[in-house]
Length: 65
Image: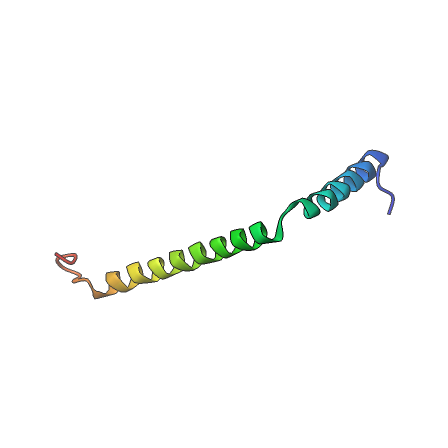
């Protein structure tokens, strides 16, 4: 497969950029950020489930009032 010269340079530049960025991220910061994203995602899923359960228990005629 022959890629144009400019595309080959772009791929190599992007690969070098990614490899240079990895050592700059502190593992503690990365783990904290990943954990925070996981916790927020789980809380959003729980809240969506709670809303769905509340909709099922509402009176269909008076809309829960």
